[in-house]
Amino acid sequence: MSLLTVGSVAFDAIETPFGKTDKIIGGAATYITLAASFYNSDQKIVAVVGEDFPQDMLDTLKSRGVDLEGLQIKQGEKSFFWSGRYHNDMNSRDTLVTELNVLEYFDPIIPESYQDTEYLMLGNLSPQVQRTVIERLHKRPKLVAMDTMNFWMDIAMDELKKTISMVDVLIINDEEARQLSGEYSLVRASQMIRNLGPKYLIIKKGEHGALLFHGNSVFSAPALPLEEVFDPTGAGDTFAGGFMGYLASTEDISFDSMKRAIIHGSALASFCVEKFGTEQLTAVDRGDLEKRIGEFISLTDFNMEHVIS
Amino acid sequence: MSLLTVGSVAFDAIETPFGKTDKIIGGAATYITLAASFYNSDQKIVAVVGEDFPQDMLDTLKSRGVDLEGLQIKQGEKSFFWSGRYHNDMNSRDTLVTELNVLEYFDPIIPESYQDTEYLMLGNLSPQVQRTVIERLHKRPKLVAMDTMNFWMDIAMDELKKTISMVDVLIINDEEARQLSGEYSLVRASQMIRNLGPKYLIIKKGEHGALLFHGNSVFSAPALPLEEVFDPTGAGDTFAGGFMGYLASTEDISFDSMKRAIIHGSALASFCVEKFGTEQLTAVDRGDLEKRIGEFISLTDFNMEHVIS
Image (cartoon, rainbow over all chains, first blue to last red; front, side, top):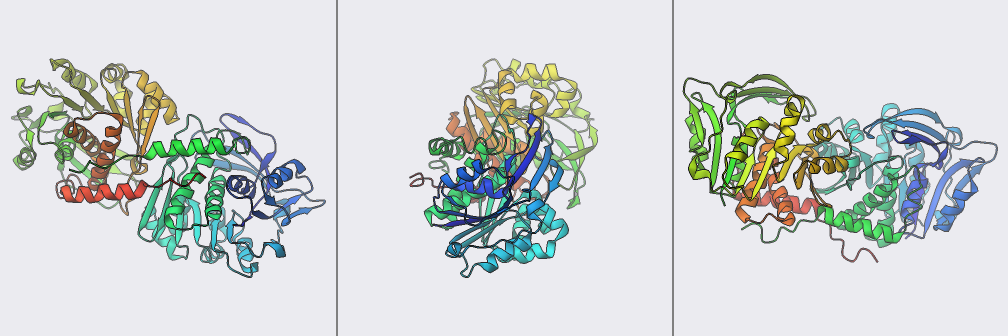
């Protein structure tokens, strides 16, 4: 089923303890659609780039089934650019440069042919823009998921909460969950946050995996223990893309299906961090993914039959 | 099969954001044997207390199947005492007081009746004392596990490595694994540490669960997401006690059995942190444990059949 992704398509420059890059291609919607393309050949995107954005990557997205009608290309303008430096633990980073460029006045125009979208993934953007997208869809999608970040909590908490109240699945990291709720315990935080509206909450914990909360149920997914996290940029977006791509392709949005979707998202994210930017995500294929899913199964499987005697 | 635990039996005084205690009963061997008593009725202990240690707790241990012949009671002396304060995140703590008392010159005498022990759990103690226990057993046990802490890495690294080289299973936390190996990546750390001798390494990650490494295999166990971690003291020892108690009772030390043992240890540790000290561990019964194991199963279970199409 058709998946619409809204988010940045942009340039990044990244420093990690392992090296640094020049301007490379990044952006939430880039990672999300690349990840979702492992499952779904009916993808749409609403985003904006400047005239500096390379045709190559647009061709790649197209070849992976992403309809680009909703991608605005602004002549005479520059694409969004972010530059950051990761600390040694790879769990924290400093932003060195943020140039909004085309994102500053981004008006998310929805092409008429996108109106039948059933799955909507709102990548990290201003909550106002995210909400505009929901409001411009004549029919509410079957499932709306959103990502956000601490930046919006710092400067636009009320706006953010209004948008959060309109979605089904909120996908944030542990630090963000704590800031949004004011609770240290993630269980308590999950209750507070779901009181804002979303029936499902996914808390990403980086190298410690992810938690899915719904009703009284919790699912804990591991991250694959890796020798090296080379570059965490885009891992969260890749996770979200795998999650939504899987759900849209199976058309099953039950809790059980979401658990599997999280494992798929985690597997794709584990590829993402192995190289800089989108390099590994565009290098692996469906066979590599299946193999990695197998690693997740053996990583977590314990057979408790015959045990309690 | 018989499980011998060596470690402190002591007093603690604990401050957490939720409150503080007077002197309460603690000590690694106390938590280990209490946890193991859910599985094993053939337990032995080598430890030392002063004349101030309450008979009540000794009676409790005895009633739970712990043979106290190896417990030395030093007249005119005081039991080991530790006092600490946990930070808000409960993952770090400051030591306020350490009074070694009877532990200062602890000579771990092994009663003759203990010589047939098949499972040996070395709780956190000086690596010299831990090694002495292994050397005094005429026949090497079927499985030797040990815990240690950063303190010994700071002051006695060479001694510690010598002892580590003699055990089968090392159980430490993530910070300790990083300090012991000098590697930040836990996968790399696990390779370095297993090169020191142990064929199995368990890395405890607190609220993020635990990892078991053996050969090229890894198992990731979750921690139960809790509304509140009231007091983490003894959680690691409880985990180790559940792990070894389970293995000793099943007499199956395969990798698969160790995975189940880790889930059992994690379940018991999740009780331990719900109240101060040993309070919850002595309040719950086998039925509570079985129910909690069920929670771990539903927490991690995802059915990946039919998924990769």
